[in-house]
Image 1 (cartoon, helix red, strand yellow):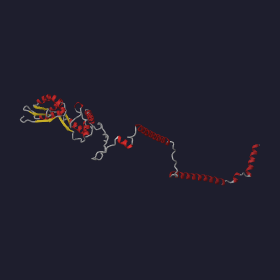
Image 2 (cartoon, one colour):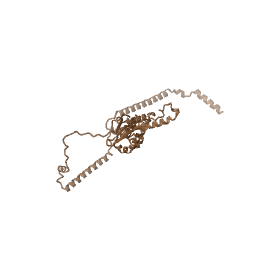
Image 3 (cartoon, one colour):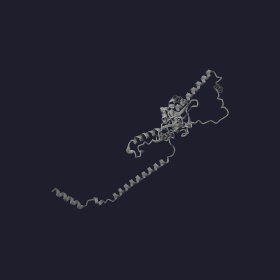
Image 4 (cartoon, helix red, strand yellow):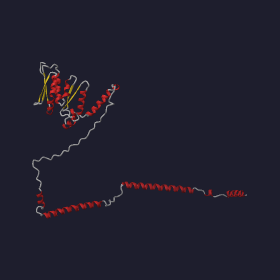
Length: 326
C-alpha cells in the first residue's frame, strides 16, 4: 500500500502481563495479512499499521478490532478469529445506561466474561455473525439487563426454547408466544438508609463535662471517709430494694381489687330493653283476657232445656227396656 494507516488503543494495567505473554501469537497472526503490530508497555498501548506487504486494505480494520478485543479481556485465541471475513464483533457501551454507580455495578455482575469472571469496564465485547442475528440478540440481552427490563437468564431460556421449536417444521409458520415462558417482574423493596439528623453548626466547642471529682465535690462526698461512703452506698441500695418491693407488692394486690360498679343511670339500650319487655307483657295479658271473654260467651249461650229430658222420651225408654227383658 502507498499510504500507511495505523490505529492504536490503550489497555488496562491488569492486562499487561497477559498481553506480554500472548503477543508473539498475535504478531504471527497479523504477519500473514502483512500488518505490523507494536506493544508499548510504558504508555500502555497497542498499535497496528499497514506495510508494503499489505494486500487487503480491509485487513487494517480487522486488526483494529483485534486490538480492541484484546484490551477488553478477550483471550488471544478467541480474538484472533476476528481476522476471518465471516466473523464480526460488537462493542456495547453500558457506562451511560445507569446513573447510580452501585446499581450499575450490581447489574453488571449479571454479565459474565471469560472464565466466569464478571465484567470490569464500561463496555461489553461480543463476537459472532450478523447473518444469524446473534450479535443483535446479544446487544438486546445486555441492554435489557442494564435497564433492568429482564434478567439474562430469562433471555437465554427463551433462546433455547426457540432453538428447539425451530427444529419442528410443523411450527415454522406459527406464533411461538404460547410456548415461551412469561416471567413476572418482582419489585423488591430496599431498606431505606438511616439518616442521622445533623445538629446545628456552632463555632464554639461544647461545654466541658464535669469530672468524677467535680461531682463528688458538689455532693459533699469528696471530704467523706471511706467508711461513710460505703455506708451511704449501702443505704442507697436498700432504698432502691425497698422501692422495688413496694412496687411489686402493689402490682400483686392490683389483681385482687374488684372492678368499680357502674353507679350511673341505665343507658339507652337498657331503657329500650325494658320498654320492649313491658309491651310484650301487655300483649300477653290482652290475649289471656280475650280467651276468657270467649269462654264466658260460650257458657252464656247454652240452653238448659236442651239438657233436660221430656216425659215422652222417658216413657219410650221404659217400654224398650221392658220388651228386651221379656
